[in-house]
Length: 174
Image (cartoon, rainbow, N blue to C red; front, side, top):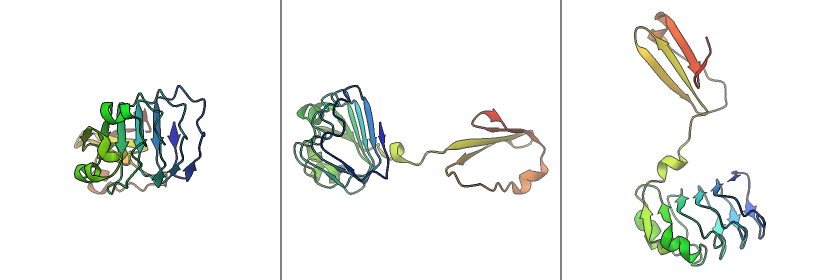
């Protein structure tokens, strides 16, 4: 389940009856009301890119959590009961590099017994597609496309070399 950036609040009971969801991505900034995820006991991974506010017991039904990914550099305090006791002791909190001490000092977040600084890659912009240009002189050139806007490809000196192949996400485009 992915909750997009345009969603501003998740009201109480919003996911009642959704007992089979195993992964939730909140791209935020969103206000999570309690108990918005009251039936989501099967969630194993929770991604929180941005958060406006987590109300008391906002994620407390998620007793199967193994990993929580928090993507903000400045963690805000959250209620002590925002997560289930099982999550605090059994889940790993993944935070951005250089922020572990901030999370350890923040109310609510500090309850996680296992915390690692490896969340940066999870929230990094991923390319929409990858363009690979091959020729016999320089080999492969791999260009990530990170926006849906039209792209202008400037090959410069490479324009004088004959192209052998061009693929977009592995699909031949020549």
